[in-house]
Amino acid sequence: MTCTKVCDSSDKRTSLMIKNIPNKYTQPMLLDLIDKDFLGCYDFFYLPVDATNGCNMGYAFINMTCPTYL
Image 1 (cartoon, rainbow, N blue to C red):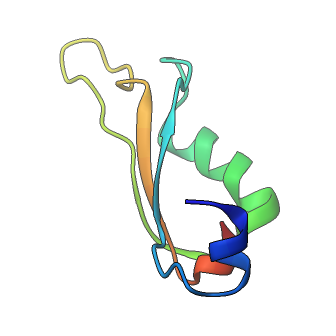
Image 2 (image 1 turned 120 degrees about the vertical axis):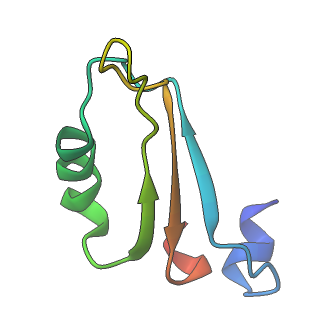
């Protein structure tokens, strides 16, 4: 995916994966960081957490409501 395709609206994908998240980040901590620039721009967020140690798995998924927010 190139910026050109997103900018001219020919690429309609809106989901992305965020990688290399420090494992001590909680969902509220990460959402606070994302919301500084993208509040109201996404409709789905998932940060998987390891149930045995309570730490996140190092990645998250987010779906933006419009491709231009990427």
